[in-house]
Image (cartoon, rainbow, N blue to C red; front, top):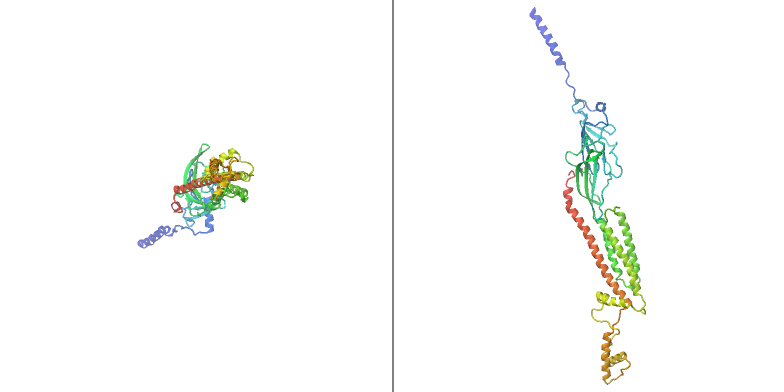
Length: 455
């Protein structure tokens, strides 16, 4: 009897003891994604969240500059961490805006349009389950850059974009470059028609403001102006016009177009100087060599107009008016020697007879003989008169006329202008080309700089 009752009691006790173990439900798994689940997660994360409160004592913001946007800003917010909560494992990331989530206060320090904290409410934050927050605030940043226009239009310019923390000191918000060291991302960069990117660099510094240190990032770009457009539309016409000045003194005074040509070239210089002044950045820190070249040639052209008027006045002076003695001496001693007017023979007052007969020589000599000498065809007086005329004609030299002096002045001035314009043109273009090629050699080839978009 006892044995029969023991077996049922043992079975009942075993069933009671083993029932909780067998009836325990399996651990809950992650719920499938749904709008209700995301709403529940947002309520869980943003419950008690303070937008103006930093995630921790010191926040490290990793930064990279994309030539399309400020790409990217990354920081960790531990309050946005739900990776350990298995309920929300199917939600890998969330989106929010700066109205609901803390963001670092950053400014573009050398901006010229608006020095304000970078704010883009329409651009969402990407929040990952490990608390990582990514923000890509795109925008057009116009910054202040020093313009060095000495070698314009073959110039090279360097421009910086300075990103600085505002309000938060370096102990509270630290700006660093992204984990890969890609300070400047070239993914979306496209070649510009006027500027060529030669070099890019980035650096991190600490600046002092009001006895506090602030984190600061500097993105530097070196650009070189593409010269083809300006060489065809600016340099080439200016050089051609400068040599037109020489043609003014080659044009014959009898044509009546010298003053008109000189004034036309002068007006063309004035127009080109105005156009170039509008294209060059307005700064007085340095002067452009091309502007100095234009100003110099404009001065030479103005002087050429004045000299043209003076030379024409000399040329058309009536022959009845005698040439001043000092001008004759100056013409004979300087102008004639420089222009080689009398290099082969001396000038005579009258033209000697070309006939070979004795009668022609006799008639010419007797016409030039003094009244005391009589005609004697028998020979003696003829020989004396011939000897006298030869002696006198060698000593009597003629002076230069007004027209001859004006033509000699034209010739000398033309040579002077040709030398001045040629030397000035070669000097200016040589200096500009040397700087252009030197800048290219110093920064390296485009292939080494633009080899990788992420470099």
